[in-house]
Image (cartoon, rainbow, N blue to C red; front, side, top):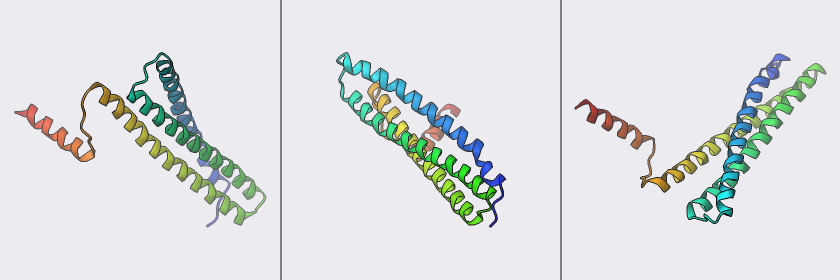
Length: 152
């Protein structure tokens, strides 16, 4: 396989947008941490708040890994372009592969963080009402049942 100068350059916009999305997630978490910190300091130390704090700590670590791997992928793209410029084709192939693997790992961490985020929202909802655990199959079945009830 031969890599042209444009091949790693194609990843620049994608990685940039991913890093922007990761930064937005981090900023949203930072605001939530500040809010929970105020609640914790004011003496509202409920069990839910402690679970939320633990969840936020895990999610912040995941975002750190996501951002780090995204930046590493970006750096590998630049190094790959330099290798192509210097006509170090074998090195460029390995560096580009490292960039893709780093991007893949970043996306996997992002998926894990999204799952953690969903669990945190469910925890917040459980404080307001009694919910049973659901999954995609129960959600689909509930959606069909509600549709049938409204049709009758």
